[in-house]
Structures are given as structure tokens and as C-alpha cells.
Amino acid sequence: MVANTTGEGWSSRRAFVLAAVGSAVGLGNMWRFPAEAGANGGGAFVMFYLLCVLLIGLPVLLSEVLIGRHGQSNAPESVRRVAAESGKSTRWAFLADIGVLGAFLVLSFYCVVGGWVLYYIGVFLSDIFTSGLIGGAFEGRDPAEVEALLPNLFGNGALMLGLHVAFLAITLYFVARGVSGGIEWVATWLMPAFFILFVAITIYGSFTGGFEEAVSYLFTVNFSALTGPVMLAAVGQAFFSLSLGVAGMMTYGAYVGRDVNLAGTSGIIAGADSAVALLAGLCIFPIVFAAGLEANAGPGLMFQSLPRAFQDIPFGSVIGLLFFVMVFFAALTSSISLLEAPTAWFKDRFRMPRPIATGIVSGGALVLGGFAAWFWGQPVPVLSDIALFDGQDTFSILDTLTSRILMPVGAILTSLFVGWVASRRLIDSENGLSGGLHHFWLFLVRWACPLALIVILIVGIFPSIIGE
Ligand code: PHE
Image (cartoon, rainbow, N blue to C red; front, top):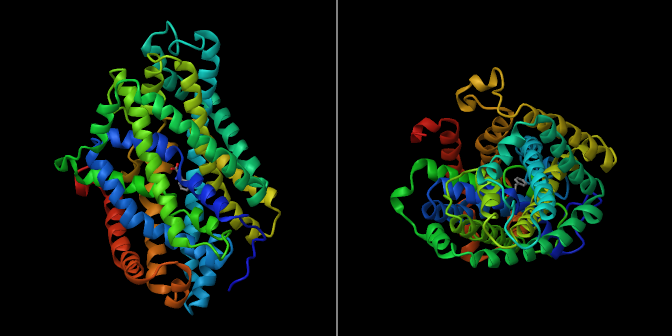
């Protein structure tokens, strides 16, 4: 067995599960999933998404955690060790270098959206004082004015920048404190708090009158709606939501003890993540439908339609505040994992104390995300001339670059590495699977995942193939 060189680790299996679920459950579930499902016609998207989680996401998740646990180090070093022990080229570590870069880039724009969440916490908090506790939110204000809160925020570069820095600073604080003292602490307190708030708000939302409509919207599958772009959106969402392809799960895997069964634990992580995504739909859509609003508001669903819908429901300001606090908890446990992957690498590579490594990585994300916030909506010179980034601003380019290129490439290489390169003995001793399930998983990582992901990568780079 390889010695743990990080000097850090989870105190229990429960801590790992909470931290990994914390990484997976985030803005991807609460903001992106309902928005994507709504923009892509509901049921067909949801069904295909679940299929992707099961057949592509889960096998890759197990592969990532497995590499981390066996390597017991930062992501690239873990891959290097697995490769060396298997008698193969240590250049494979490159796959995790891409991941670490991806995590850094996602972190940069993730914290910008985290900043919006902070903004809405402030908005609802102050609204409790103006509208009172009992009635709807934003009493006496024009609905258009409530929906305009988001574009107004976008128009205020300095505020966006400040919020981004605030969210990043909170993330930094916990990562700098280390695995058991910081990351684990947040996960153990905030994830249960998140679940309690989430279930409570969903139950409350189910009484608003739009619940049945939401259920039929999310679960009625119309196969003709399953077009190329819908499938691409679903698989991208599955990957983003499971935190795959960016070395995050590999990094967390390195802190896992030998006694943990990785297959079972990965199943729990993927199951919890999908359950939260579906529940997020069942939390948001009833409230939105009850207010007579449309499902297809895209990114504006959570930040515009929902606040507008809170105008109509009793205790609207309080529910709004609790809702955004809950989203904040989910987002923070994810951004922490995004910062941890590059930090762990930096710390080992340059032999520096954790707080300094955390500070340096955060400084980079501050600048890059700061650009995205400050130059919101402004096409990036030169880059936005490239077809893939057609007319996009910094924020969208970071999103496109990571979700369409880096994440799929990272995941393709991970599945190829585990399926074909790493020694069978090593894999068999780590994955916690046996019998038919073991063979099925091996088939998926060897064939199904790389092939499906290669198609996704090509279509992602040349969306015109599927007429997007
Ligand atoms: N899975 C997180 C979410 O759903 C985002 C994330 C992506 C976190 C990649 C870590 C790594 O919000």
C-alpha cells in the first residue's frame, strides 16, 4: 500500500460521504438542473440525465475516487503512483493536471454565482424589515421590479466583484484550515442543515398548488423531445453535478481510509446528488407554476422567477431568505472542493504550508473571476471570435471551456486510464465490486464511458453537428 503523503484525512467514512455529497450537491443541482430541465422540455431531459448519471457518471466517479484512495496524494501525484505501480508511463499524470486546471477555472466562475446568492440573501433579509414576516415578499412592489434585480446586479460591476470576493474569501477561510479542521467541519454542519431546510421548503412549496403540475412536468417523458442538444445538455449536467473530470473527487478520495467500500460509497454520493436535483425541481417548479410563471426561464429561473413567485406566497420573505441560505450552504461545500483540488497540488508541488497554497490559488481565482464579474456581458476580444466561444464574455467562456472541453477530456482519460492502463490487480483490490457488477463496471469504464464521452466532446466542440 502507498503511504499517505498528504498528512491529512477524513476522520470517518461519514465525514467523507458528507464532504463528497457536499461537493456534488451545489449550484449545479439547485440552479443549473431546474434551469436546464426547464429549458430542455422537462421529462425527456430528466430521464436521459438519470441514465447518464447511472451509466457514465457513476463509473467515472468510482474511477476517480479509486485513483485518489490508492495514490493517497494530490490528484496528479496519485495518478503518477498508480501508473508507476502498474508499470506504465507516469505521463498519465497529465490527466489530473487537466483536472486541476479545470477545477481552478470552474472555481473562478462558480464564486461569481456564489456572490449572487449572497446578494439575494441580503435582498430577502432587508425585505423582512420592509415587507414584514407574514405576507408575501416585496410587498407593494411591481413584479417587473423584482425580476429586474438580477439585470441590475449584472449592470453593477463593482458590486458583482465585491460579492465574488466575499464568497471566495469564505471558501478560502475553510480550505486554509485543512481537511479535518475546515472542509470536514463545514460538511458535517452545513450538509445536514441544508437537507433540513431543503425538505422543509419543498414540503411548504408542495402546498402552493403547483405541485401536480411540477410532477407531471418533470416526469412525463416525451421521447420526441429527446433531441441532440437535449442529450448534450443532460450529459453535461450529469458531469457537472457529480463534480467529475476536474480532479476534485480524486483529491477527496486521497483522504479516504482503507476500510471504506468505494463502490457502495460512490453509489450513495451519486444517488444523493440525483435525489437533490430532482427534489430541487419539485421545490422550485411548484412555487413558480403556482405564480403562473413559465418553467423555461433558464438561468433566470432561480434568481428571477422564484423571487417573483415568493411575492405571492405567505411568509414569502422568510421562505426566500431560507431558500437562499440553503443554496449558499450547498454552493459553499462545492466551491470548497473546487479550491481544494488545486490547493492540494500546489501545497505538495511547492512544499508550502496549506494556508499559503490556498491564498495563492484563491488569488488567481479572484483575478479571473473578478474579470468575469467586472466585464459581465462584454465579449472577450479575440477569443470570442472563435466559433466555439462565439461572442461570449469571460464568464461564458470559462463555462464553455470547462464543461465542453476540460471536463470531458479529463473524464475520457480517467476512464481509459482505469479501464486499460492501471493494473487489474490494483483496480480489483480497490473498487469494492465483485462478480457480474465488477465486470459490468469494467465494461462501462473500458468502452461505454470513453466512447460516449468522445462523442460528447466532439459534439460539444462542433455543436452544429446536432444543429445547435
Ligand atoms: N457539482 C457541483 C455542483 O453541482 C459543482 C462542482 C463541479 C464542484 C466540479 C466540484 C467540481 O454545483
